[in-house]
Image (cartoon, rainbow, N blue to C red; front, side, top):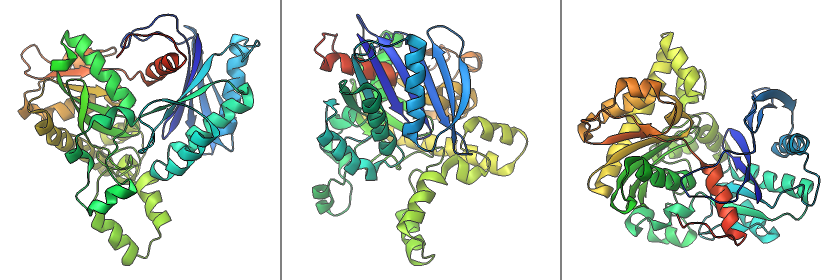
Length: 407
């Protein structure tokens, strides 16, 4: 069964094609074909494409919309794999959808009604939903009525206790759907299962804090395989400092901007989503690699941005521990979590009081999933590569009636 997965992030679009025959939840298969779109400051799109085990190909295209760039990508896929028969040789297309709201607690088949609902929910995740809907439109344009399945980042956090989901404002907020939803759930769920496998532990007896650090950042406390607390809330704006998002700020600041500086809601939304975080503080870039390079050159704002990022990460991780009672392992995942030894080292240094002790050599050399803690560390420190696309492909498999082991 061939399943194409579209994973629209806040700064990129990942696409993978899988051929699934048998599968296990935390034993990902390599994709037949994969590609990534990154948006350039000039308004174009930078593409990286890899067919099978071949070398990556790079190109840039001028695209006035997300859908136009995706159309180019799909045409490249068709050419690479010579997909000509039926639905171009595909059985289904899966989409990562960030916000399911209160309506969607499980993956669903995309219909006009579902797309309309997702459009309404776009107000809660504007960096993602519009791109996700454009992806659905691009698939329909190229492949017609092929089954499309939406898989939601909020689903895994449906296990959050009421004390975690209800905000301490007027209780009437809840009637308007204002509550903590949590995000990055697809990867948090995968990492929990993968951590149990790496540690040779029963997931039902494991207490984890998973740090998904990428363009968007969140941490989640996982007890017995269930999410019991997380840093993102009603929208993906809450919690940790991110690439261009502020994370949690004093809501009084927003009132001050409205009243005293006469800023519009649109200006404030743009600032919180696009002009804050690493970019806003450093003045250099939203990319942690470039911030680290500027910090190495002695640029003070880059050093400040890195310091705030680590301080707020450690603060939120520590705040999640009471939800677990104790901590067995700290997990780093996502683009920054997987590829920045500096971030892992600085975070673990601040969290040493919890009993986590990083092995400097293992941390510096880490390239695959594994335990980076010293033998004597009371808390294990894991690096796990995100596999959202694989989990989405499995969800499509299940919806199409195949039998897979339950995660």
